[in-house]
Length: 306
Image: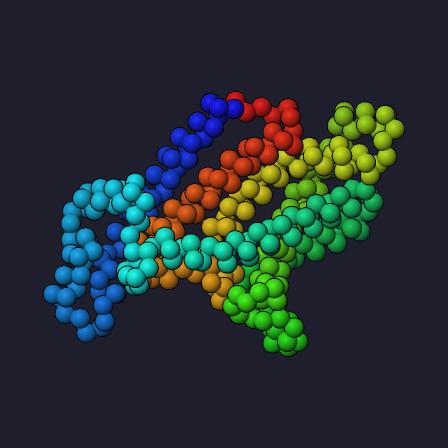
């Protein structure tokens, strides 16, 4: 376990280093930010002075070394649009809203998918399979932004049941969570159904029946843990992506999350915020991947960490 963790730490450090380096290069490739930060009537001299103050007149190599130096000190700079706030502070301020939306939608979608897939195989009902799988395919064919707008038109505008925009507690979660969770549900129920179907002819399943286990017990205690292993990787990547910013859904529902903050920072060339945001997203991916590896060994003891 110790060598494994050490190897994962090294891999995480390399991943984060590559992520921040790419963010730095791509940010500088779009030009200098002073013209967008200053008012429209700013002179060329004022623009050049601000670029110099921000360090954008230095050679690219010098800018990169200065950035890495600040990064190792834990200083990611300040927001160019709001110099009173640190770049990482802008991202961390938005992180709770994104985490609330992402984790809630992910958990609901995954749990419902597990329940649906287990019911399909316990009941052996083709009707249930058609309802969940083919009905889910219809949902999957609809883009999230359009599905979200339909929910707003029906449940907010027409019926007035839920708020349509913003982050203001439980009721405001319903529509954006429903938009993401239904898409998550469709993905997982199809994968789980296919994976459970593969397990039905396995030797250990026949052995479980021979020992006198009931069909529901075999499905839940024997087949489901094995069927869930292939889903775990997909679920981990999806969760990391959701935590990194559900950009489209956040835009539709004016949700104050990381995705909206990064889009605004990119359009305003607020490079410090972009770099801080990408660093947080990369860190989330690294942490989630390590957790997924740990869960593999918990769910299936045969999986050894080498």
